[in-house]
Image (cartoon, rainbow, N blue to C red):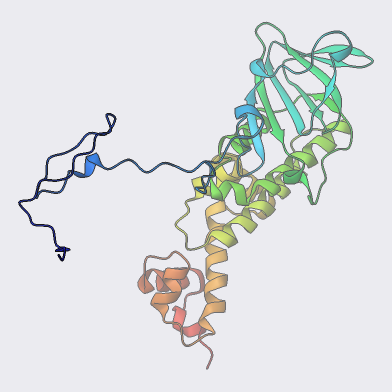
Length: 315
């Protein structure tokens, strides 16, 4: 007797007598997807882990490497033998109200309104703001201060008589720390602050001709790199950490011309260099240098030289 290998559809399904197994009635409809078991995440999950903040959620340093802390919140060190502890960043303390107590291994001193205290990285100290104290404490990483034309002082600098402009320089440097334009000029700004600290250590004023010369040099370097990017004079001054008025005064004192005039001179000099390339149209040159068009470029040349831009093309 042969056995038919194909089971007839009307044959009763075999009965499973195990008590822990549920037997489903035959159906022509697939079970819903929710009935399928969920895929388990393997223990060795290969998905990239989220980035973690270093040192127990301490904020990352900004792009410039400079962080601004209100003086009233800047407490450092402890009590007894731990009153003075070393930090890995440079501290610049500017007191605008009240007093800041600085503790050193040899003792402590209270620094009143108008004081500037620079403490280089690696120095053991403590800081205790007194009631009513206010001011600014820019913290600068070692990396952002490396390679400066005027290195930061190697030891502590304590002085007084800092101007409001000096305070504004510090605030602008840190407040715009994440701005790419400010980041590009951070080294210039820190170099300027470093020069002022050296003058303060020597007993000289924080403001003066040397201060103006450095501002104008930084301004010309920044303006040359930002031509054609739509930066206003206020943008450039803000990136340098000063007001547009202070920038204009420095330019007039050092060059005898306004800051806006110096930018126009820079644009025309760059335009004359680009006119040597005949493959560039006047419109392309105007666009590259921030003019509104070829007509604007021609008007600028006529006003400055009495001749149109094409007159400066090579023969």
